[in-house]
Figure (cartoon, rainbow, N blue to C red):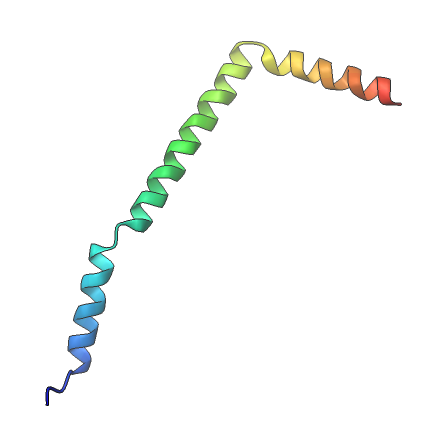
Length: 65
């Protein structure tokens, strides 16, 4: 009968943690989405889209009153 010690279980757990790449993938997708969001805000700001959208929503809000 083989007795597995606490250090064996800790080593197995550490190896699983080091080999797990799912967290890194989630972080990469998060960084990618952040970059896309920053690009969209920049495009909307520089292109004057935000002012046009604001005017459109204000017009709609006035018509609903």
